[in-house]
Image (cartoon, rainbow, N blue to C red; front, side, top):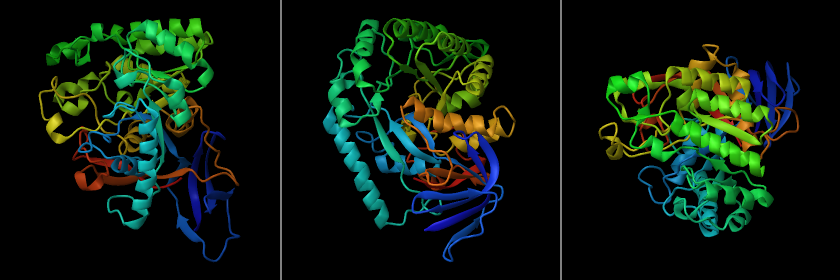
Length: 434
C-alpha cells in the first residue's frame, strides 16, 4: 500500500524536528518527506492529517506479560495488541512470568509464540479500537539475572544472551550486593544492557505509600524515600568501581534524581527511567484508596513529581517506562494495602502524558516523544531511524484531540486495573507502522 499523509505534524527527536510535512509511505519505507508532495501514484491512499501527530514508534523499556502462567491477567497476544493500540512498535517484557524467563528454552518458546500470534492475527479481523489494525510490535525479552528471580543464584547469563534476550534484569530488588558486584563483572564481555530496581526492602518493610503528610492523613503504612535512595547510592558505588553500564529502573524520588544527575556529571555509565504514572500523580491521589494507585515504588510526594518531570526535561531521567502490570478484577478488589501493586498503562500512557504534560507545557512534544521512543531504545542498545526518505517506516500516528472512554470494550488488554477506568480521555493512537 502507498499512503500519503498530508499536513501531518512530524515530531522527530532524531532530527530535532517538530514541523508540518507531507509524508509518503510505501512498502514499509518512508519514500518522501516534504512541505508538499504532489507527484504520487494513481493508487495512493491520501489522508488529510491536519491536527494529527506523526512520530517514531514508541518503545517500552519494561512491562509485565501475564503469559506464561497468568493468562487470565494477560495473554501475550492481548499484551501485544494493547501495545500496538497504545502506539508502541517495540516492547520488552520482564522475566517474572511463571515459569520465570531464566533459561534459553523459554526465550525460544515466547519468540515462537509471537510468530504464531502474528500468523493467527492475519487470519481474523480483530474488533476493538484501532482502525486500520496496526501491526503487532517487536517483542523483546528480558532474561532473569537470578534463577526464579529469587535473588540467590545467578542464571546462565551467557546462554541467555546467545538465546537473544534484550538484556538482563530480575525486575525485583536485588539486595545481595556481593551478587550484584559479581553480575556486573560477569556481564562486561556480554555487552548486553542490565537493569536494576534499587530498593531496600528492609527499609520499605510493609509500607504501601510514600512517607509524608498524606501517608499520615490516610492512615497507610509509609515507605521512606531512603528505601530507594540508599539502594541507588550503593548501586552507583558499584558502577563506579567496576565500570559496567547499568540502567536504573523505577526512579521515584527527588533525591534519586539528584544522585543520578551527580553520577552522570561524574561520567558514570548509567541511564535511568521512571514510570508514566509517577510523572502524572502524587500521594494526594491516594485519597480515593483506589487499589490501582497502589504501586511499587509508591507514588511520590508533590516535590518528587516536580523533580521527576524536571529530570525528564533535562535528560537526567532518560526514559519513561510503562511498567504495564495487569491484574484480574478479583485480585484488585481488596483493601488498598492488601491488593497487589501495579496498574495497566500501554493504551493510556501517551494520551494522558500528552494531555497533562504537553498541553500544559510541562514538557515539549519533542521532550515527551524522545522519552517514549528514541531514549528507551538507546537504553536497550538500539537505534530508532529518523523520519527521512529511504528510512524504515516505524511510526505512530496520534490524534491529540480525539476523545474516547476507557472501558472494557475499548481496551485490548484483558485487565482493567487503572484509576482511569470509566473516564473520558482525550488523545488516541490511530495507527502504527512497524
